[in-house]
Image (tube, rainbow, N blue to C red; front, side, top):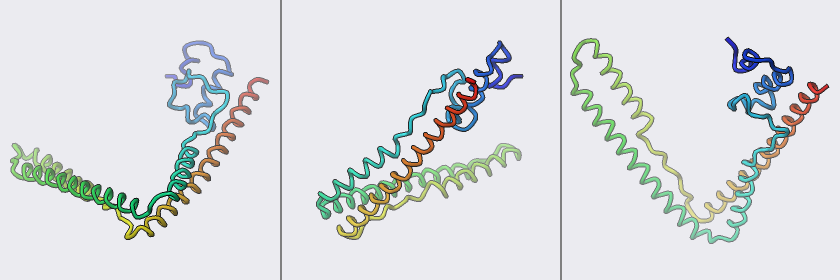
Length: 192
């Protein structure tokens, strides 16, 4: 039985160039094409992802805007939003716990019809208990104690984000250059 890479060769003649480019999708620069249909053309050149560039630009813009805000007003606004989100998270966790506890009561009240069904009851308990452990606590987002601390923390957070995305975008540029070189070398090796 042919593999996805040999299916075409199994069904019809195939050039070496076509076969090697088809197989190359599982390696190096082309590994991100593995999920694509095998007949999808391989691009002549890859372009770097702009994710880190966009995140960098956003963080830089936010840092610039931060220098023109009223720290007291922003701290109050953010503290109110965080407090509201924390209350909502706590309420949602309580409601989930109540639903789980109600289901536990129903499982406890259920009498398995045969001894073979007792394992089902045990399994149902274990599933709810595991869910309670993971689903019934709420993350409480911390708030800054005062506007000065808020401004300092926000500035540091944005500066760290800028540095991180600069480094990661450079890595993406380097990876793309390496992928393009790998692809160029492969194409040159089969055009000889």
